[in-house]
Image (cartoon, rainbow, N blue to C red; front, top):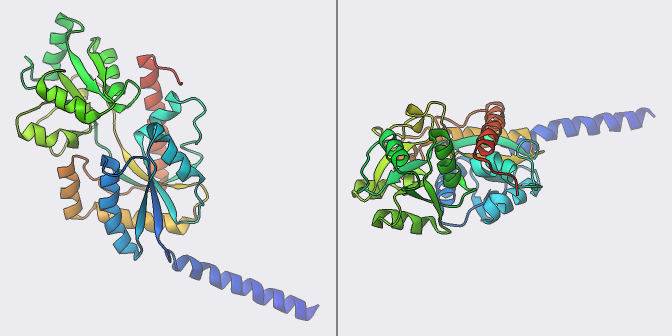
Length: 324
């Protein structure tokens, strides 16, 4: 009995010693990052740029797993079901985590219960730009122009239930106007039609607009975020005209539920370091999706996601959309 007790004590001691050592070896193989958008899209471009630098800090490659489709559901579901061993993470967004729960019946993942927030990447608003020939320059003038002749103005969107469509719909509801929403399966075509004058307005993340604004092909009107865009400091927020109006197109790194604390902490620290790098800040600003001031803490990010789910729920209810 004494010999058995001795061996048991030795075994427990060995396990106790080896557990921290195993954590210290992470990562000892490539890390996978699910992106619920195709290669070359905005999320994909940001993910590839940042993870190259994060991977260099961690000493391992970060492999991008593009899983586009179904409004981000396919990639997000795949991430939720991935093995929570510290080698699977995902880019999650305001669409996949905050609006989808209110727009999609039987959503195959739970934003709060199936994921652990790891690092906030960016929290830009959406930009409203106009064909430069429209007879207004400010949001107040746009609203007055539309109220004078309801239904005269048109806006190119990526779908009534997608980010730009929700932004346009909530603008109509909040301002008491009736801009006609023109859905495009290709946002690039909507952009070109706005430049040509076939439609009057275009809504998308700011980065899509920047080069066309610089060339005089688009006129910026207002942004939907909680601060003015760094790349467009003279363009007012919608909330400056319509108090309380705020819509963010945020991007975050998340991990499947059950992921160990050590990989989450080290990923958080690596992203925090990268997001504060001057060259990264400059690149993100030029891309039109300013870097967050830091990665944040998992607890802060969980509270943020919970608040965003409630905010998008109220907005979608005000617009009058139901889950499908």
